Image (cartoon, rainbow, N blue to C red; front, side):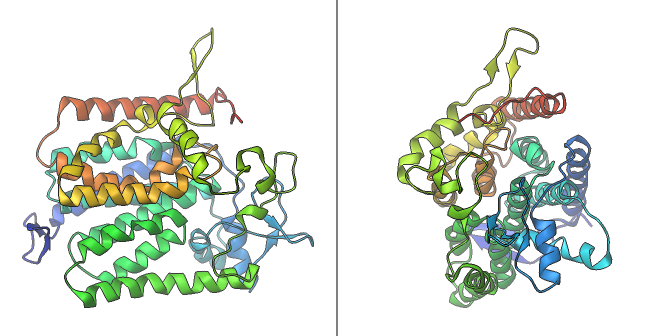
Length: 401
């Protein structure tokens, strides 16, 4: 059972065996453990936009009732559009059809567990040995993904997108089922738009065979066309999601009038402050225990997700350079966005690039665990455990403006 099957793919001259059957059991076990931890440690997040949107879809509607605690685009008649890409609502639909109430934290925990299991499977598919693959997977699961895996409208969509793109990469590194890989990438983008920019890595992995690339594109179109029609039906444009018309919580009519969007929703001028938030945000220092006070506005990835900084030397190989370059491409719209995450512990936008950075880590730690890697994993787990505790006892503050 533990023997690799004979089917093989090719990746830049490296022969990749199909994943060993025993590895799937390990992946399932790690994923199930992560899902259980996420479900047990998260706050009780009640409001989310995707459950009501699933209800609307089942009744042939595109609007949800106005709700003050959700980011929505009001129509002025007591109904609103959900500006976020709609794929995360699809997971609510089977439960809605069966009359079963399901919570956002539950689905987020399940999606987070799936992401963890698929991350381990991807590492093993890239010929990372079992022990370093387990360490890297723990580093992923105990980083920003831990807090994100506990739920919330924005976090649920990001976690689901991560799981979907990891599923696509598992197929792509083996050169298998490009239509399905394209569909998974499209669904990931339909959950979290910047992740669609992961396409260059997929193209590289399927290179050399035009029929496979055509199937990859076909899978993407299966999602892109309905998504464009959805936008046309709501706003008259295939590319308009309504982000600039979201009702503001900050004393102005819409988010486009908020102070952090002075140059529009997206602007290259925002990149320096986004990089500052990603790299240099720290704890607030107070005079009483526990002395370090987390802020909802963010925390440096050097503390909250340090293993991903270790992926940078992977640029020396061709696959590593393409994976890292694609990660930068994915992060550009995040860095150019007017706000830098806010409802988060760490820097949640990094999750969009984590699957790509994981490929870089796989190339660097295929056969060994270094003291630096072990330290980064343990630091990330400890810092995120502290953040969950701080949230549970209401120590977190912010977001700052």
